[in-house]
Amino acid sequence: MSRTVYVNGEYVAEEDAKISIFDRAFLMADGVYEVTSVIDQKICEFDGHMARLHRSLSELKMKPACADDELLAIHRELVERNDLDNGMIYLQITRGSAGDRDFVWPGDDVPSSIVLFTQDKDLVNAPTAKTGLKVISIEDQRWARRDIKTVQLLFPSMAKMEAKAQGKDDAWLTEDGLVNEGTSNNAYIVKDGAIITRHLSNDILHGITRASVLRYAKEAQMKVEERSFSIAEAQGADEAFCTAASAFVTPVVEIDGEAVGDGTPGPVATRLREIYIEESRKAAI
Ligand code: PDD
Image (cartoon, rainbow, N blue to C red; front, side, top):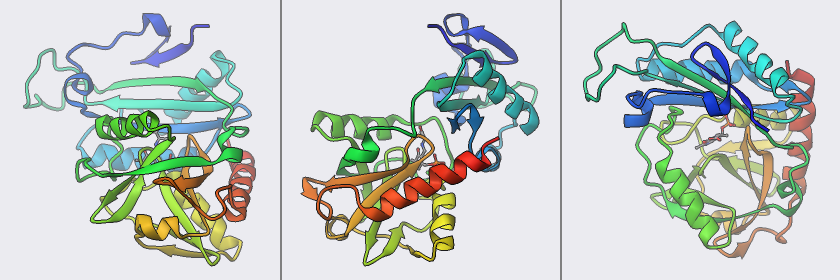
């Protein structure tokens, strides 16, 4: 069935949606995005996603396409028009179209482009919560501002396709021998009860799910260490997992062919997933 999507002020059938071939995101990946999860027709972590969106826009000196309350209304309207019970809403804002290709942007008079669409997926009952993910490590070759959520996703998608070609689920991106993050998620290990995840910097995306999961972990008196770790340390850990709006908390059970722990989802990841879903369900708007 055709979805109703939102493009530059209008709700249209997906097959009728149009964006200029001169749009800067099409020509230069000059755009930012957010992916927000939906549980039981409600939007999760909206304020967090908006705060990061504004940061991404301001780092790229890009205008917001509309106010946050309008964006919330559009999210809700799309949920309703598409009968979306569970899944995700993708939001993209680009610098817009200046009607030609030029490296130099003509300036502030050009309106930004905005696109939103829904993705129907039962994230709560995802089979990977029970099976866990198998990941490979790949040297991180993305640009140096991974804290900005841009649509420049060529390297992460190639890394994920390489993982799939090897019969695995995802790739953890490494730099100087240490794990930055997954292709579209933040990466964690658990050792002797401590949850270890890379500290924030320009080298990784500051996950909205990450911030909430670490808060819930601390509230549950779990020990949290924000520091880098190597693939060898991860392979020797008791557990591993990843977080994202599209994955909540998902266990990782194998890294570069080595089982993590006993090779099945561990108790810490399983408990954090339960807490995250429970709290998100309560706070969703
Ligand atoms: N990706 N790291 C990267 C590189 C990501 O692309 C994402 C999210 C995350 C987790 O961020 P959050 O918890 O805010 O979703 C970390 C989204 C889901 C995507 O590209 O589909």
